[in-house]
Structures are given as structure tokens and as C-alpha cells.
Length: 111
Length: 113
Image (cartoon, rainbow over all chains, first blue to last red; front, side, top):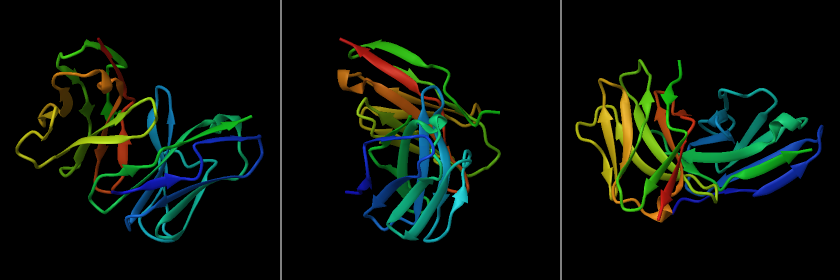
């Protein structure tokens, strides 16, 4: 079974802090994705990666950056967290042309 | 224009009844894929069903079927014989040429005993 894990289920940070959200998949998938989910807005793509060290902006990249140094790991970075980044963050991975598998999500609160 | 539209924010359905969740999409790409995911209160996204734009037949997976009407650009999810465990958020999503998924805003389905 494909497993996508995220470093935390719940996270509370203060405004201005640097925040790292980690995602690891164990099925050698080329593609990895970071979404945020907000009520009434569905899931919106922040960044995605086709391969190691490759990244592309999604629909809402402002305020975020990503890192993919190894194929199995994709990190989302909030350089200076703000209250409007309070949200549920979902990581996903997929083989090319195949469906996405999601992690359990990280509920981030920025105070 | 919205790429994926789910017009039903919430639905209440009696247990054992069939339910149809609406999804319309907009794309000029001839090759695309349509997905439905279920998100229970636990938050995990569970893949339900997939339909490719070139597939001749509607996709089915157990109690789930996808009513694919290409000319109308609609991809409605049909759940037969609903169960209490079907209560969840349901998201329709579309993948175009670049591997990205675009999601609708979701429908919250509540099954009433």
C-alpha cells in the first residue's frame, strides 16, 4: 500500500516564525504536491514537483517555498508565518499519469 | 471561469437511497481525467473513482459510478444504496496535461438514518 506521511497532524506557530511542513512517500513517485484546504474553497495547489530539485508554482504560491532534495521527501516552507496561513495543508504524490495519493494532513494554526 | 463547479454545498439523503453529486468542468484540453475523492471528518482524502476523457464507458467502482456526459461537460458521482458511513465531504477534481489536479469546492453529504 502507498503511504504518504506528514510530519505533524496539528501545529501551532506564532506570526513571523519560519515553519517547515514535511511530507514523505514510500512508493518512488515522481510527482509530489502541496495543497491548502479552506472551508468553501476546496483544495488549492501551492507548489508541485515533477522530480528531485524540480518545482513549479501552483495557483497560490505567495508566502510559501518548497524543497525537494530527495525523491521521497517534499517540504513546504513558510518563511514568515502569518495568520492568513492558518489552514489545513495536504501533501500528495503520484506516478506520472496516475492518481494522487494523499497524506493525513497538517492543521496549522498561526497565532 | 471555474474549471470545476460543484453546485451543491450540502445534501441530506435518507439511508439506503441513491444519491447523485453534481460536477461540471471546463477545459479545452482534449485529454483530461476526472476524479472523485471522499474526505471523512478524519481529514484523509480517499480516492473513489476515475474517468478518462477518452473512456467510452462510464466508470464504476462498487457502489460508486460516474455519470460522464462529455458534451455537457459533466461528471456526476452516483452512490447507490447510501450508508451512514458515506457521510463526508466529496470533491470532484480534473487533471489536464500537466499532472495538476484542480478541485471543486466540495459537497458535504449527510446520510440520515
